[in-house]
Amino acid sequence: MGLRLAGVEVVASYDCWGPANETNFKNNAHQAQTVDIRRLSLDDLPPDIEIVVGSPPCTQFSFSNRGGGGDIADGLKDIKTFLTIVDHLKPRVWAMENVPRVAKIIEAELQKGGVLEDFAHLNCGTHIIDMSEYGLPQRRRRCIAGNFDINLLASYRAHAESYTLGDIIQALAAEPINDPLFGLRLARKDLTEHVEEDALSLEEARINRANKATHTVYNAMPFPDPLDRSVRTITATCTRVSRESIIISPDESRSSYRRLTLRERACLQGFPITYQFYGSSYSQKLKMIGNAVPPAFSYLLGHVIQGHEADATPSLKQAATELTTPEPLPVPTPPDRVGSRYPANRTFKFAVPSLQLKSGVRFELCNDYSSGDVQWRMAFYFGTSKAIQHVNLGTALSQILAESMSSSIRAAVTPLLDAVKGYIAAADVANMQLVWAHQGPGGTRAFMVLDKLDEIGTILMNALQSHEAEARQLIDVALRMEHGNKFFDLPGIGKLHRHAALILAGLLIGSSINPIFEARCLKENAKLRSASSRR
Image (tube, rainbow, N blue to C red; front, side, top):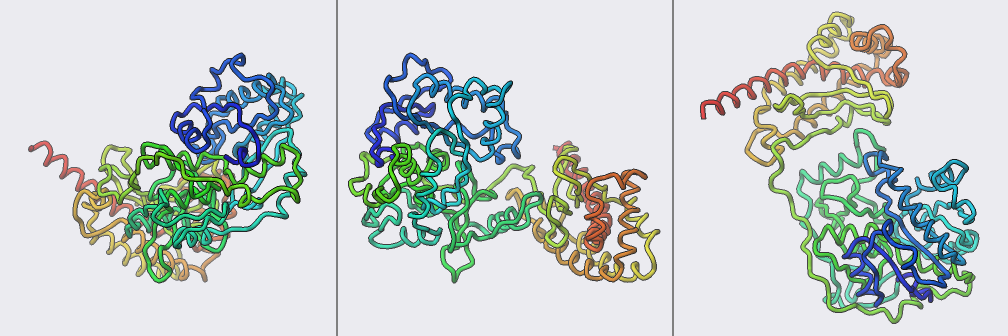
């Protein structure tokens, strides 16, 4: 669509996913072929092509895929196929879009001995573009590689309007609806894909807040998403409780939260309000929107690859006046609903907010099914992402810390540790997993325990502030017990010492409550096995 609005005649296009091709055809009156380009014969390509653009799948390169652990060699096969097509057609100009990580990979593989060295003659430049600088209401950083004029593209930034998440939300709530980017107008009754999901439940809101604000590994992000700036990157997949989900408050006077509608996501992704997505499910449409190259950006790139100066280029609003809603409309797909039940072994793993540092140093409350039965516990991790370390928080640690501490620290911490041990001993640990899996009633929710640990952690940490020197010594006692005399060679020890009160507070709490957790869980698991055998 962006290229077409810029005056480029799209002769042929190829995608391996049928719904994307149907969407392309019905919105752009353009026949798209459903084919895997790895199997596309060069002889079947049209001749006399001036422009080639493409967006090979980013799955293997994205850091959101297994933390950046995708199969890069497999991902390079698609890039190599794309460059083979470029080399065969010999267009005047070409461009390829992908995630930012691809820039350095392409640069390295174009060198002698790299898998792309045969394409070094294509004059490939790699550029990291933030599309919010070009009028997209989304901070979408992407690698745009090719032989186009990057300076000409950069000149378009001076003419770009700025839009915020709030601009889009408000525009789609008005009557009539005025498209901020494309200038189109629709009666509210004619707007599609704008059905709001159920508001997040209290549990879902809590999980989303934790995933963003106190994630156990990644940096903090705001919750809810601020309306006065451009939005974070729109992704192809997200759930009601994912870190990637963009969450807003429906009304500033209310405490409920919701995710974005499909139409809100599409507008933030640079689609006009008339554009329709022909997926058979809600998730297919999410994928279609999130995987797209934003038309509002490709419109500008379409002018750049034709050599048009920014001053002489019509605005997107001027170019889009003839856009209409295609027919027939796609099948309505209801949004996701609040989950009522989860697997019996549903995972719980959340950092205790007061006992957490950046770079993955944290104490967390979690459930563990590695033995086949559920075991609730508190865990401690530190080090680096490539060398994660831990300390076992159990009876042995509790005893050695008690024997090693001075009477002044003992007097400061004992009442607090007795309080948290009493809380865990009285908690309904037996049914906590059932409650978490929404499969049964119980008196204690896991987040109630997390909140108590957070509360005690803050108080205990404050009590230890005046004992920093001894706290560092006690931390070394714990590290030596777990890792021997070579513990000083472990990564991140300096950071533990700099935050000695926090770390010792977590060690004391975890080693005090884990034995109680273990005894309670062992008793309940044995009771369940006994009842099962009698049946």
